[in-house]
Length: 244
Image 1 (cartoon, rainbow, N blue to C red):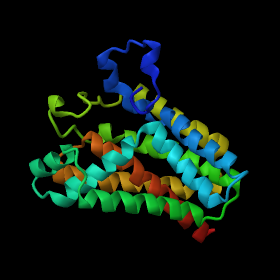
Image 2 (cartoon, rainbow, N blue to C red):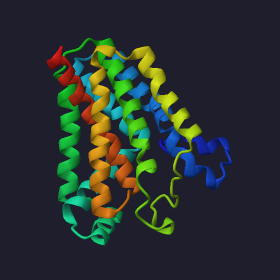
Image 3 (cartoon, one colour):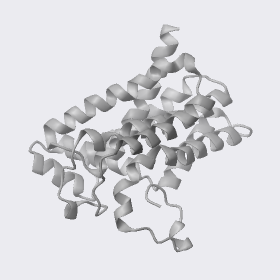
């Protein structure tokens, strides 16, 4: 309901407003759906189309499922931090619904980089599909921990989603980790294990940058964090191949 465009509201689900404060630790579980859809779309379309076309269709399937939620955050992130210097100016730009030059260039470059990195791996259909799933889920787990490292940078009433996420309890963190590990244990080729470290490095670097610039995070920062961690995962795959 929160992370996808699925019309779950039609089921008349009455979710207490306070529950949305705790959605972040379910993020990797949502990754089973978003990453799984990419993997399934890639696998099935590869039976008909070249892998380049299949990958584009897989990317499009996630964009449709999420309503480009994270990509919107990434564009605002680039606009805000690229166009603003002072904290309040950065936050103001990110809240603006218009996309600027930094956002267009940053989002276009990130999508193209994601596509080119996977296309040039030249893996089998099954290996690529597995990476699409694992990369999505693991990057969502890493990104979810932004609520544990940083405070929210705005007042709650200024939030686009009108909600401020709560930090994870130890139990919630354990559930979040479990959601992330299950696909890894089933689908991940552990010879690429070093790739799992790269999203952690990206997370540390980005949260340190956000802390210095705006003393916290926003919802846009969460979307940007996920996509940049996902790209760093594939950087790690290339490093694994180089070292092997």
